Image 1 (cartoon, one colour):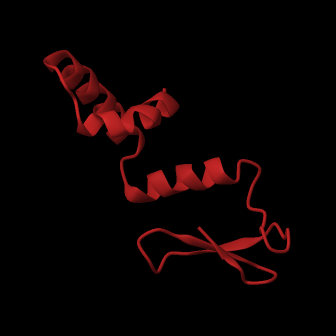
Image 2 (cartoon, rainbow, N blue to C red):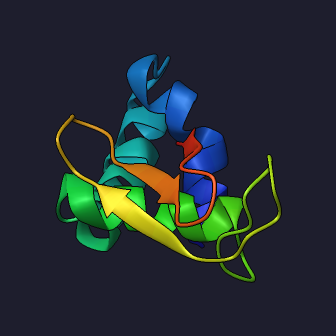
Length: 85
């Protein structure tokens, strides 16, 4: 269900009829329940990008540290220090 909500997210902004508005309000409520914070959303996106855990695109190392000094977190490779988002 979350994936279908994410696919429909652009449509949440531009509903065209009262029926669409009601459906999109339900979809938005489900989205907000699933992603109750920016951190929860970022965790989901990281899991989607690296479903089997972090793998550095530069050196293929699998250990990373999370850098939270900006709005969206970065993962920094524990070997070569490459930063990926």
